[in-house]
Length: 347
Ligand code: F6P
Image (cartoon, rainbow, N blue to C red; front, side):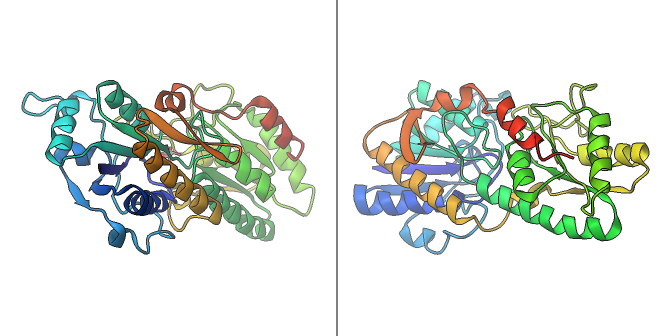
């Protein structure tokens, strides 16, 4: 069997571990051959491939990013139509040209959304969920999240010492446009003064009270804010108005806004640090390497079993198969009771 593999959407640590596990398991256990498609859905759209065999995946386990490249190309958009052929038609044609019997799509809600639609139109697809945001339904965890949380936690630990030396409030902006999982976990692990997430609009007065309270101690206030968090008075904190190919807003800037507002209201110096793509780069943690490897093994097994239209998912400690649509139907947001657990540490 000839299997195509692609990685789409924002990259995350662990993608290479999945690719390696797919190729090794497929080659040794299921007599598969592989075609690597470059840059997410752009690869099958433009017939852009690269060799993918056991020698090509040696040494990539600890490497961040993706050896296949990634993009946010949306093959179902009007822009994907070329010379009278829709994106869907172009992909089907190119899969046939390369003799691809099945495709493994590794991605988040957008990539898996496309995979689900292709499956409905007759393409043999298996999905692997990934995102540092950990906001996909149907799986308890996505790989990449643990690495991002550890990077953010280490940043918070470092910011504590410099904030205390200078008696400043430091605001740490982390990723998470709809879901505040990274902020919640990194903030809890790093002992944040207050954690602000998109699911729970904040009251700036209350945030300033927490900051003032922390200044009464010998510890400095570290405010952890998810990029999509916003005050109760606004419906969004969007500062950058650009949209990506799937129509998502790009966030960024809430940390700076908070710093200015905290400084104005408390009279104490407040500065912002935006972690941005640092959270997505570099080597994956052991947890993410193991989860990604297990996803890869189970994804190629699903292909070998002909379980198309399915996605691998983590339930407890087991890897299970669920319909791809389950991952994209609803985002997994931070429930109020999980946020309430953190509130006892605020102030
Ligand atoms: O979905 C993963 C993610 O890292 C989000 O947390 C973030 O908002 C977005 O991707 C950033 O995307 P890009 O790298 O395309 O700017």
